[in-house]
Amino acid sequence: MIDIGGVTLFERILTELEAVEPDDTSLRVWLRHREPLAERIAAQSRCRVEFTYEQPTGRLNELIRATRGATGHLTLIDSDRLAPPGSLSAFLRLARSTEGDADICLGVTGAQPGDEDDTRYLLGKGGVVAGVRRVPGDTPGLTSAGYYHWHPDVLRDLKRYARGSQNLTTCVEAAVECGARAVAVGIAYSANVNTLRALASARETEAAWSPART
Image (cartoon, rainbow, N blue to C red; front, side, top):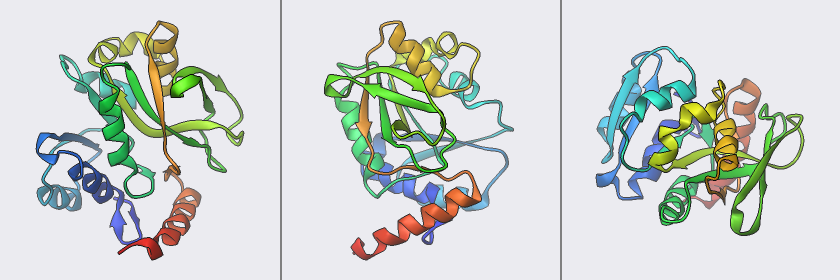
């Protein structure tokens, strides 16, 4: 449970979800083991939260298992991400508005220094994903912000799109090559807080937002 500015990333996610029709929102959370703090936080939320406790087998494998038989759209949220307040709720509203037009809606953001992600999204007119290129991790460009909104038809073909990888960008790239329409939503800042260096940087960035809070 990563704490930044006195608030865990999990609490931040729930706050964003509660701003977007919480009574109609179900959240499934994968954890390696029971987290009493996470369970207490979830119990206080208006969203329905279900926990799955298991050792990681790969993000894509878990997504495929979780979405078997899915008949509706599904949003995947990277729980180790820090973004400005309101980013996730704004993404969800925009993603839902694209459901009649797009097969995938994803959040993109400018690559951060030290980011290990070696993929950059290429966008065409209207934010349509035109392709993906692979580059050294410190190359400027648009990378994943950790938000993905999937059409059920794409979910059913995830294993084929994965091409043996656990990388979601690979899935998006393959789906686009097969004719799926993917659109991107810009997120002003999104840091993958997966190292001590990234955590220190994220805390510094979040502290700069504090004066704007009420």
